[in-house]
Image (cartoon, rainbow, N blue to C red; front, side, top):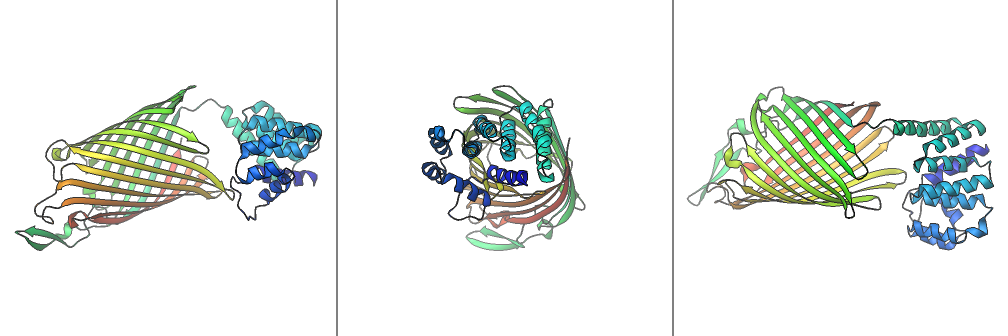
Length: 454
């Protein structure tokens, strides 16, 4: 019983959320706060989320608690939250020296030692716990999980990562068709509504899609090198003219510096439609990435050379500026990943093109979390606007400059079927709004897929 209670309290403390609200039903927070109240200044720092200052305050009064195992256990928990794993291991070691029968402190010591990278000592601590304290089944499973993690981490690095994915789905706008039944045409100051051939209206169809990708990544102390290649084929049941095949490859290098992580990447893409080449695209970008607490943020620039196989009049060079940020945070025991990407682009045509130069703006917001132990949910929204600098056509809205507003909403659920096999279900909503009715589109896409990593 002693072991179960100590392990329960220890695990509660170790899994505390980063944010402390004014009111909470979280017993882990209550345990920690009740112990911290004996140290008023450290308690205040903790409520202000100043974990490092709270640890320093405890350390300043350490001489008064040289024989208090609970004091060193408390300090170790705060150091764990501050990711000072070596310091936490030292504090938990003091706790077990003072109170050798404190099974919870031994478990905390083993976990902190593991997180510090000392797998050999961590393994010996886990073995000691299993041999001397006879832990309950739940704790045995916890220890087994940590041992598996250490085993995987000690294996030789795996440089190649491969992914095979098969999907079946339905697209309500398989042919990228228009929504309107007519097109307004301006002629000599008058507007005529011309009926649209039904062949150009949106049509739904079922499809099957097969994707394969591979990535090679090699790292050293301060550099990382990447190579990737992917291929995707989507075949429609009826809309064969819109069956597509895409190939993409990329190389990149990242290097650590005093400013942050500097990256240089190059990509090449080839797209085909109905077995005929559609577009070749080459992109080169550079970026600077930095860390802040549990977040990462960065800036980048990209140049894109877009070339169409048989539509040379659409060829263009596009320059982009980008800012991005991503954070991971735990709230009430659930970890959330959040990312925001903003891009500004200038699309320069190579030759004369309807609409002239186009200004582009993009905003991507992504949110992901594991809702249940075996269910991951990911949601994203993508807002993309384009503004032409010149009139598109004298026959459309009196030669108005075209504006496009693209919106994509995506929700995906993933559940594992095996160690390297996942089942996915995805929903997409796509819309294009424009001041020119000719370019307005919308459609929904949903699919069920299998992902195999190897």
